[in-house]
Length: 243
Image (cartoon, rainbow, N blue to C red; front, side):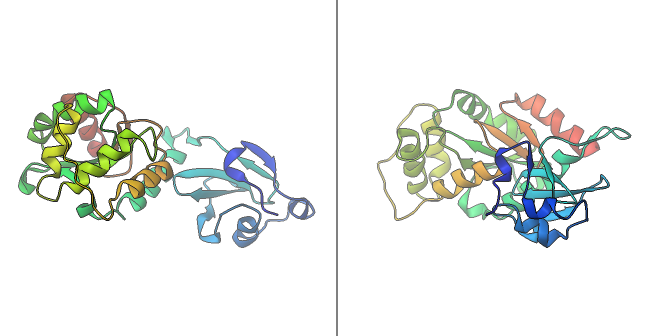
């Protein structure tokens, strides 16, 4: 039986692994002891004697003898880099880049004026989401393109979810207008359609570690946090570019 590694900070993996008596297990052997982990998700870590295991944006470390699993952020004290967060960011880029832009609602300046692109998981009824969207024109004027994905915090079969569905079903040419209307408490059409990306967005949000809305990610996968005023958002993005 495999162990559920994502729920425990420190654990014994298996009696079989213990019997190895500190012999280094292969990546395949480590993956076989962990629920839902493929050998391709096990990599050498910067620390001798430990593997890095990344499933989506969840990152943990396993001793190479397969005995202990540790969850927590690993820092390189010579550079002050959060090594774990850097790995999370790379995984987020991979996952977010898999979303077709046609399945997002995008507010953007002209292509030639785009300096930065951010992806935001948003909830139509979230106060800070509404605050951010009320400033979307200024965000675009600062050269920032915004890619919205839906993340109704109340989950499926709730009013916020239905609103997201209805905004999407309003049609390609009107989604931006009706998203704005919905966030300002205005009218949303009663349109329905065969399918929407709301469920896929919601599941992706959980996979990349969304815990509330808005959750903002840079193009490099860095989680910028929640609401930031436009000027502060630009400053943060410029810092990331400089780094």
